[in-house]
Structure formats: C-alpha cells, structure tokens
View (spheres, rainbow, N blue to C red):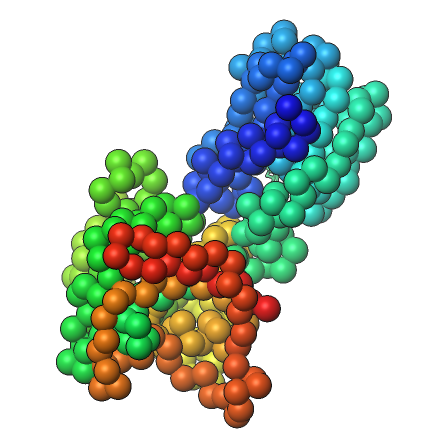
Length: 362
Ligand code: AOF
Ligand code: ZN
C-alpha cells in the first residue's frame, strides 16, 4: 500500500461528511502503523470534532510511531478543541501525510509548521487535486467568500423541462429522482427560484434513503411571493427554510415567514431581481459551502450569466416535448455563439432509463 492508497482511503472517509460539516470542510484521516490501519476518522456533522481526534481516539496507544494520512492540513488554532496538529504531536505520531493546505487564515501553513517543529516528518500534496475537488466548497468559501454551486437540469432530449401548460411531473424516471435525492444529501443546501416554488410547491427534502441528513432549503424570492402556507412553510420548524429576498419584500410576508420559523436573508437587488452574486455571498457568510440549485430556468440562467455555476448536473430523458414546451435555461442574452458559456464533459453514465452527464466550466 502506497501513500496514495492510504490517502484515497482517507478521502473516501472524508466524503462521508459532505453536506453535513458546513461551515467546516469534510476531512478524512487514516492512521497506519506497520502497514495496518489502526485509526479512522472523518469530520463529524456540524463540523466538530475534526477528523484527526476521532482517528487518534480509535488508534489509542497504537498512534505512537504511526503515520497519519489527512486530506487537509491539520488545524493549528485553538477553537472549541485544541489544534489537531498538537493532538497528532501529543499522540506521538512519527509522520504526517497531507493532501492539501488549509487556506483558513487561522491555519494557512501553521499546521504543517507546527508538526515539523515537533520533529514530525511531513509529506504534503499527496492526491492534492482529488482533495481540492472534494473540499471545493470549503476552499471556495474561505478564499472567495462564495459557495460551490451545482446546477441540476432535468430535461427531454430536446432540452424541455415542461409542456406548454407547465406540466413537468415526471420527465425523468424513478432512478434519476432517487439519484437527485442522493445528490441533495451531499450538499449543504438545496435551492430553487420563486417560479419553481410557486409552480410545484416543492418540499425539497431527502426521501427514501434512510435520510440521516436534510439539507437547508432555500428559495430565492425577491418579493416573498411564495406563501408561508406552502409545504416549505408548514415544515420550516423541522428542516430549515431560508428565504433570500430583496429590500422591497412586504412586511406582512416577512412576518408570516418569520412566524413559520424560516430564516429571512435580505440581499441586494440587481437590475432584474436579486443580484445572484450578493445572494451567494450572503449564503457563504452564513457558512454554506455547497449549494445544489434545482432551477428553475430563470434562476439557473441568472447563476450562469453571473459565472456562479461550478458544475452542471444534467439528466436527459428519452422524450421529445417540442418547441412549444418550456426550455431548461432562461435568457443568457448572448450576442454571438462565441460568447456561449462553455463546459467540458467530466463524466457520463446511465441512471435507470435516463442519461446523467456532469459538466465543468471551461
Ligand atoms: C482539521 N480537521 O476535520 C477539519 C478542519 O471552528 P473550528 O475550531 O472547528 O475550526 C474550523 C476550521 O478548522 C475550518 O475553517 C478549517 O480551517 C479547519 N477544519 N481542520 O484539522 C478537520 N474539519
Ligand atoms: Zn482540527
């Protein structure tokens, strides 16, 4: 087993926390002694405890002289718990292998330095690209003050998401819908625009997966037109509902949603509706790192126009709806094709009877 093999194991463990550790990263840690795994840890829901103390607790005295594989530079700051770098040194670990540095200003190289100062051999950068991809949400929040945004599209072969009358249930099959629920669970929050909220009265929860985790449910609703008597309003006390609205949202609607238990986030308005960048900055400042946007067409287009979309997840169903149907993407206001937002194909697979493709901005 190589360093990369053990780091791949740590990355798999870290991924268990995705969607549940915000505002913190989802870190994984494996402790190896004489070729045997003696401790495993991953960041716990809510972001604490960190991965390393969990793995050290499992290893116990076996940590003495062992090698720790950690997907992110161990922290060096005194938060609610002592720094992980100190914990590794105190346990007598001989070597620490990390995948990526932690840009959090409280850490930023101090974790590695603390380990070296304690006489521990440190190897950095093992599976760095994979670790950066795994924690892209946390890294983007800390470095740019924005969350990582995944935009989901589910459309017919001719790119339609509803008939002319607005009928949209169901274009993709049951397997694709299950896959969407699994994706929701790996994000901190699920988001829709007000058009989708009004048309579908969605619940946006995770069902059928023995769901241990429900992401925050967000509606971008500049004037608070969505009713607090909706499914979201009636369940806001059980699973968080956040409403991003503008300065002109009526006071009565604010009061209704507040009484329902929702969190109201007032965001700056742009030329048409809310400024999408202001919305995302606000959500990052609330701690969100990974957002799964499920439409509709207008919100998706606003995010794409603003360059806020980090990944497209596109389901295609074997149906044709025709030009009178509603398109998957709102206005992009292109002057010419050369200016079209461009993506590269990252992966493609079949999900039941549908096609699933993932695209990343070029
Ligand atoms: C680690 N291991 O598993 C995680 C780390 O608020 P605190 O005290 O929990 O600190 C949060 C910061 O700790 C976070 O911004 C990031 O820099 C780091 N997260 N570090 O050593 C972990 N989740
Ligand atoms: Zn830590």
